[in-house]
Picture 1 (cartoon, rainbow, N blue to C red):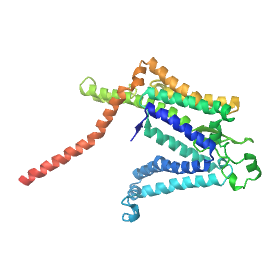
Picture 2: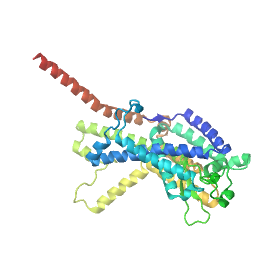
Picture 3: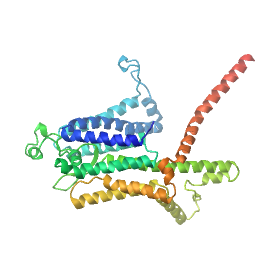
Picture 4: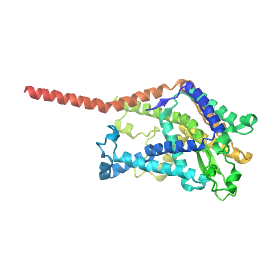
Amino acid sequence: MTMEIKAFHAVMFVIVASGVLFVLFFFNLYKVVRVVYGLGGSFCLSHIIFHPLGDVLSSKRPRVGKFLKTIPFRNLPVLGGFSFQWIDIICFVLAYGMGIAWIYIGFNRVDPLSSTYFWIVQDIMGVCYCILILGLIHINTIMVATVLLVLIFFYDIFYVFLTPYLFGTSVMIDVATGEGSAVDADHCEKYPFDKACMGSQAPLPMLLAVPWTNDFRGGASMIGLGDIIFPGLLISFASRFDAAKELVKRCSRTTTARNGAMNEDEAARIDTLGEVPPTSSSTPPSKRYHYHIGRIRKALFHGYFGPLVIAYAIGLILAYVAVWTTGRGQPALLYLVPCCLGTMLVLGWKKKQLSELWAGPKIMRKANQIVATANGIPAVREAAAREANSDLAETTSFV
């Protein structure tokens, strides 16, 4: 199940995000945010890490898989008719146990990032949040991507660079780093066991943080989850567009083979990039090397996904260079949006596909139809088999 973002959603998101940012700036809700983030992160851990690991273990160890799929406590009235497998219970206990331990450390240390467990689990939960959101939310046109990223671009600039002229401090940086906490940092340095200081020096958890080591100043390198998710929506669109083109190309190649224009074995051997891989053991190593180098080069520079990943990396490097040279926090989207969106638009214009990408690629709709048809084939076969069995039973009864 996925949700497609429209231009209206992009505008509403910026409005709602502005409201939430001001609430966090004027009211001390860091502890509430930490609890909500920890519980939500536990849910993400369960579904993104522990459940898939359980499925892999079940496929490798059939006896363990049989146990994990059993349903305990079938007749408990408190369940209200719901049933849970052992894998659900185990994943729940592991994920929420990690999340609650993370929350506990956040409330019982002045600087929770000094705990290795705290920042590693926070980063893992942040990555799981990103994976879950990018899997549920899609952008299907460059027009919507442009509206969203341009709005977020100016949103970041306003709340980082312009709010100091209105409020005397940067709203975004204060909220993200926790500098807007009601507890004074100097007080907590003098009285580290004061209950009011516990967790007060931790940044807002909606970011990935890696503490600096061997640095007397302390601090950490941080990137907000939004700096991953918003460009990630565009990169995800590029990946799906490339995959749709490849799927349609494969189906066309198979159709050509069935029509007799190409041998089916030859069509099966043709690589996804349109080349015949060197499968023979007598193939010289140099030829295999050049083949694989060619695959990597085409994956990086042909299509859209590879170039956008490179553009994202360049934008991230520029953002960190700006932090080091200016000595102050920078809005990462100030560098990521021009790099990623600019690369997509230039490539689309160069490939003469910009108008199609802007309105919504027809090839993606065609690929969705192919996938829907393929997914429906087993159900059609089962229905046909049931109908055949029922016809056979009626014939036998008449005989």
